[in-house]
Structure formats: structure tokens, C-alpha cells
Image (cartoon, rainbow, N blue to C red):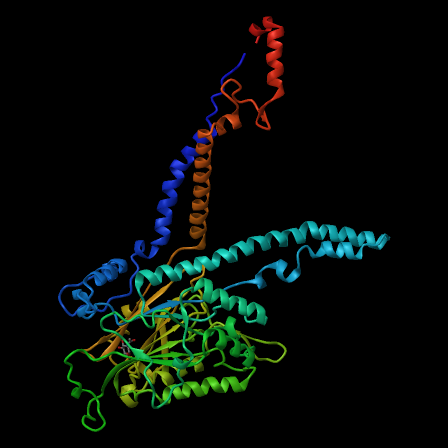
Length: 598
Ligand SMILES: *[C@@H]1O[C@H](CO)[C@@H](O)[C@H](O)[C@H]1NC(C)=O
């Protein structure tokens, strides 16, 4: 007796799966590709001078309207070169300086793939090469076989996993850069060191990673032109102007790279070869950029400092100074004292060419890699130093020493614990940005000039705690300080973070102000999941379409897979009904009596 099988048709199963998979894939893909929008990422907004307040997110969304293709179309249609939209004529509400800060991408490569440095199945080669028919030879061969089975196979599988992982990781990082850059519209970009994952790369591998950095991860970005990487000088050219109208994108593609320990090594590894190849690929390790904010329309510049006409004023034309600093060899002992002297000379020049502490209107943004000293418990990393056993030079450090940290606070920023120091010890306004501690940390360094018992010492707290303790701002009279933001890494294990630093000018107090926010993507697993689901969905749709097309030309895939209704559930051999069925039919003919016995 022929039983009908109720097993559903394969194409029907596929249709049911796709019905669920396609909407899920589309939803997840939209989420992934618009994650800065769903995460309401935006550069912090300066407080509005008018009564109407706006949210940073809304302001960012507005800046995307009209979309560029529509704007271009209307521009060509009206054929006018004068911007017609009212927003182009009004100063932007956004901060004129918006720095996209990215920490420690650490591009890995061959150094983390076992087969790249061990070879593929190295013990198999040794087995073939060294095989001898002797007692010892056979014993050795057995050893090799065990190593092939356990060690080599494991290394091979691990390598395959790692190769796929690295390939995806580049695109994951690229996705962060592209998405956040598109949505938040920064004016400047910085990567705060550890661009590559190891300082021990040979030339070929270093070049490979530099190419991946520029052509895959930061595709579309540009290296800083050599002529703009300026050495601090008494008479300097401006690197550019900041725009009040938010229409200048000259700098929005140039990456300000900082050198990290994995790029050029710690003080004990640093050589001129390592710095030379870094500078060639990514830009100088020490330089400065200066940006001027044009004075507002109708501003009376007579109120500003002028050595001839108004030497009483302490107000300068608003200027942002970006100091890119290699702090890898600030601490001792360094392998090359010559390179260490270079760093110190650079810092001295930064100090000597800065405006005197009494002046207002300048702001120093220090971009470096290793964070300043902090006692255990403030951030994730705690103070840690390690030295090479062979020559005693500095092998590794989590933070700068107390002395080197003071160089930032009292040297570059000119702050002082003494209220009788020039400028009341308040120093120069600024902010310090760095990486290295992948977890990230937002802190405030300050010194209380009026502390009881003469305990005038540098202290550091988490930024939020410092705000709560009123160590920041107007209440903190006699407490000079600076915010230090250690930017959380953009690596997947740290949630694919991007930092958004806004700096704007407050005309009333003639001071720059800064605010910081973050835009995390989430771990790399989401990125993988979405792309794998999309891949499966696309393949599923293609198979479904092909099946449909075959059915039209008379080839029913369901029938091919399951057999016709008569032979439902029976197996097929080479798409031809199995011989057994034919034999059964023959038997039926010969012995009809059996038909009922079933
Ligand atoms: C600074 O010291 C004074 C005197 O001890 C104290 O009243 C004040 O709260 C301190 N300020 C901060 C921010 O610690």
C-alpha cells in the first residue's frame, strides 16, 4: 500500500524560513548601518544664546536636511552660486571644532596567525624529512604524528579562524569610522595611538598594515600634508580657520595620527628606524596645528590685546592649538637619549611659543598616547612600570610617571599650586586626550591652592566626581585644573567606541569650552551576525528564485528531492526513481493478491 507522506515540500520550508529571515535581516541591517542615528549620537552642543534650546541630536539631524543630492539639485535648478537657504547665512549652532576621537584600533596581522610564523603543518614536514627506519626514527615519527594531530591541527584551525576574524575586524572598524563620520559630521579627526598591533613588525608587514589602515579601515581619509605638520615657532602660520557657518570640510578628512607604543615602541625600544617608518606612513610624531576662530561680524577688535594700542587687554583672537605629542619616551631610562632629547626639546618649544598664562582666548588640545599618572582605583589601569632585564631600559608602562605628568600640568599648561604665580597659577586652558588604557577614563587633574595645612598637591578624580565635588568651574575658585579624557578603544572587545569632542568659544568669558560624548557600536559579534544573516538570506532568496524558474521549465525541485506524490518520501537515485519502486510495481502485476495484505 502506498502511503502519502506529510513531509512539507523543501521549497515550502525555504519560503517559511525566508518569511522570517528577510524581515529580521532587513531590520538588523538598517539598525547596524544607521546605528549612530538609533544611538542618538551627536557632538555636544554649545549652550544656546537665545532662549530656544535644541538637542544635539536634533541639530545633527537638521544638518542632514536637505540631503546633499536634493541640495545639489536645487542649486543647479536655480543656477545660482549664492546660497539661498537661510541656514547657510546664519552662524551654525554646532561647535566650530568637533573632533572625532578614536582610540587604539591596533590592526593585527600575521603576528597573531600561528601558520604565518610556524608554517602550515610544520610537523608533517619534519615527519617526511626526518623519517628513518630505526627504533629512534620510528619513535620520533610517532611524536610527529601526535604533534600533527594535536598541535598542528589546532594551530591550523586557529589560524583560519584568526584570518577570517582579522578580515572582518578591518571592516568592522571601517564601519565605525564611516558611519559615525557620516552621521555626526566632525570637523577634525584624530586616532590616539596604537594604530597597528605590534612594534615588532618587519618592514613588509608594517607596510601591509599601513595600507590596510589607509585603504580599508579609514578609506577616504587622507594623510596630513607634510607642510601642515608644524614645529612650534615664535612666528607661525595658521593651519586654518574654524568656520562659524559649518561649511568648511577641508579638515574633515585629514587624520591626525598619534604614535603609540605598538607603533614605535616604549622608551626602551624606540629607535630612529621605528619612528622614521611611522612618520613616513602616518605623519610626524611631534607637531602642532593652530586654528583661528574668525571674530563675529561687527566685533570691535579694539577691545583685544594689541602691544601698541591696547596693551592693557588680556584678550587674544580666539585660537585653538593642537599639540600632537609622542609621550613614549618622556620617562627613563630610554634606549636613545637623543630621541628623548628631541621630545623634551619639542615640549620646551611648545611652552616657549605659547601665549603667556595671563592671556585669554587660546586653548591647548594635547593629543598623546600614554595617560598621565593616577593612583590605583581612579581608572582601570593602575600605575605600572617594567624594565628590560638586559639593559634596564623602560620596557612597558601603563601611565606616565608623576614627574612627566607634571610636565603637562605645570609645563605645557602652566598651572601652579601657588596663587601668587603668574596669572594666579590658573595656567592655560586646555584639555588632554589619549588612549592606551583600552577601557577609557574621564578624569580631572587639579590642585587646591587654598588647601589646609599647605597640602598643595596635584589630585585627580573621575570627571563626574570632580563636578560633584565642585572642583570644576565657577565654584572652584583657586583650584586650577584640566580634564583628561582617555578615549575608550574602538576595538570590538571594548564595544567599538568613538569619542565626540566639541570645543566652542564663549565670548562672554572669552574662554573656550569643551564637552565630550561617546558613540559605541557594540561588539564585533553584532556586525558578524548581521552580515552572516544577510548572506544566508541572499543565498536563500537566490535558491528560491532558481527553484521557481526551474519549475516553470518543468523541473520541480520538490519532486526531485522528495519524489512525486505517488512515491512521496522515497529516496531517489540520481534524480531517477529508485529501482525498488519499479520492482514493486512489477511484483504487484505478478501477484495482485498481495495488494491487500499490506
Ligand atoms: C580647597 O581647600 C579648601 C580649604 O581646605 C576647602 O574648603 C575646599 O573645599 C577645597 N576645594 C576643593 C575643590 O577640594
